[in-house]
Structures are given as C-alpha cells and as structure tokens.
Image (cartoon, rainbow, N blue to C red; front, side, top):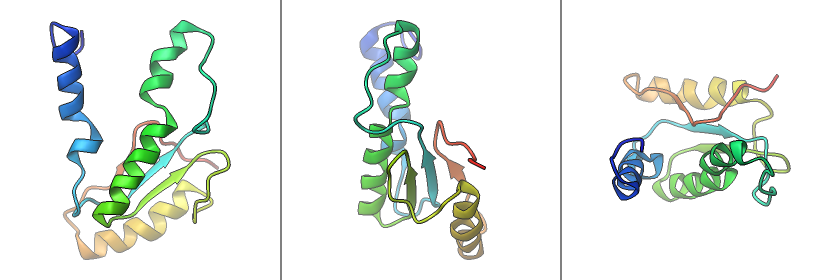
Length: 118
C-alpha cells in the first residue's frame, strides 16, 4: 500500500496529504480542469477505475466549496460548468498576476489533473 503497510495506514496518509487538509485562507488561486461531469458514469474497465475515482470532478467541486468558504479564488472547469475563464491560461494571466503582486512569495498551484486547454 502506498504510504502504509495496511489499508487503514494508507488511508490516513492520503487524508493527511489531501489538498482538502492543506489549503488555507492565504493560499494562492487554484485552477482545476476535468474532462468529466459530476454525474459521469463509472468506467467499465477496472484498470481505469482507480484513476477515475482519485481524479473525479467531485473532488474539484468539494475543493472549490472549501476555497470559497476560506475566501480565495478557485476556478473549476468541466463540461457544462460555469467558469469565468475560457482557458486556463486566462485564469493564470489574471488571477495569478494579481496574486503575485500582492504576495510575491506565493507559489502558483494547479490542481491534479489540470491541463491547459487551447
């Protein structure tokens, strides 16, 4: 098991490393992009199932909810989502440029499974 010798230890390690546990009110803006909708059907191939579960858009929706509660910008894009940015590049050009002026020490993060869509 990754991070532990038992399923329980691995689960605890995953929780401790989760972005849900690590984000805080002073976090830089984040951008998340998914190719699936929240109601996407489970893949029929078992080999794809684990990645589908780990990188599911529902994680992005929960992370965005927490970011909104904490008061920092989190852009979430998936098919049919309402994002103010048409491209991830536009998000970084506007949000992160402002963030870097205010907090030049901040590191710009892009969530797992995010990609530039051109």
